[in-house]
Length: 148
Image (cartoon, helix red, strand yellow):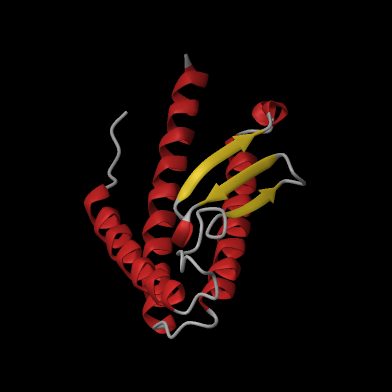
């Protein structure tokens, strides 16, 4: 099944976001009270969220990049629209958790929060458009299978 998603734009945005995150991490590490001056750990920059009363669990990396998605098998009978709603709910909750964690980590550093927020917004919008396309493709495939 072919998709109309152009991953190159999202890839560039993610690279820009990671560059800004690296700058923010460097600023935080420079101001770290730790003896080793280490940057934030992957755990500190990981967001987690659930949807559908816990039937869908999402985990995102820095700037909301989806790392894992767990969908309870009992949802298979609920249909793609319900599953999509729960997935969106879980991913959005995970992204909010990641933003809050990042804000905590960078609070003491002199970081260009505006640039980080703008880049996150661009990445989030592009990811959302890609996700909508993927759900549309999944829905179309399901309808084709139901007609057979």
